[in-house]
Amino acid sequence: MIKYFNIENSKVVLSDKAEQSDIFMVTQPSDEEKKYLINTFNLDEHTLNSSLDIDEISRLEFEPDHCALVFKRPCNFLNEGKLEFKVDSAGLFLFQNKLIVIVNREFSFSENKIFNRVHSIRELVLKILAGTIQHFMEHLRIISKISDELEGKISAAMENKYLLNLFTLGKSLVYYLNYINANGVLLEKLKLNASKIRFSNDEQELLEDIQIDNNQCYKEAEILSNVIEGLMDARASIVGNNLNVYMKTLGVITLSLMIPTLVVSIFSMNVKLPFGLSNEDPFSFWKIIAISFISFVIFIISWARLKDKL
Image (cartoon, rainbow, N blue to C red; front, side, top):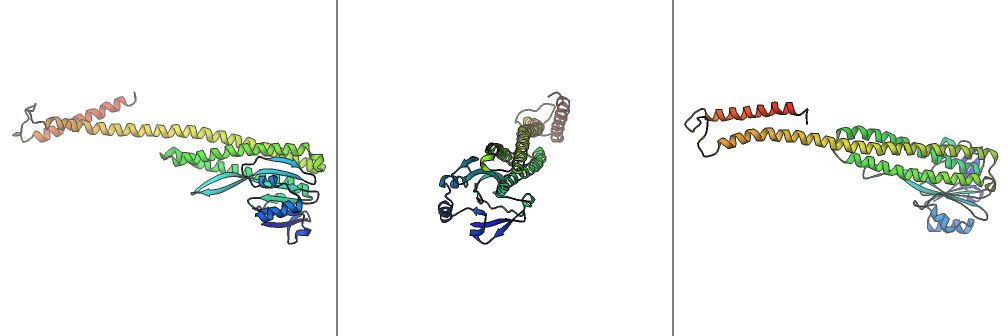
């Protein structure tokens, strides 16, 4: 699907005329749309396909009449009821007076205030990259909140699902770190080729600000990744310790029941009984119960004295 936009009064506005539009937003292009873009604008087919490949790395390429930027964007979705964070690819094909945006998931120029003041096509390219960094930062804040919630649940739970959710977040952060760094390399290449792309002085200053934001985003993701990794190790130890406590309690209960059972089993043997007990003694049953109870009390007292030493 292709949508058309123009820059009017420092804003990106929707247009219904392709021939008079400066900005093309192409979302999940069909084979026919790809052929149209390749034949009409002389786009490189490999670079076009790379813009839609989630495994493609960020890069900058120059063609005779345009330059192409492949960069990474964050995305999230629900998988079997679990929120997962992934990274998607997108492409920007910058001509002298035209911009073609290739994406798998459409984004709106009106929803983000960063696009409220746009004066040129090249500034729009930089602000799209800046909006991507903001999107990464928003995801990092969400991941931080989710990890805090999981931390409280893991402390009181014996189930593995919370640890698995925490592991999923940690895995997502590894991908984020890799691709935020790749976007940083792309920004550095843009800076080195600023004169070739014809960035103005103001646009070069904006690019430097975007680089700073990207570095801060990378550091925040790195810190959060380390925190979650530490939480996983700590919570795994807590779960193991909780299991040991439960097993210890179960062992005490088992022993406390086994000792009276042993006493009763001994006096149930078909032999002559000690302590003057016999079938003719009307109090034999109650004497055996008393001995069982006394043995149970002795065990409890002994355990109470020994548990602090174990």
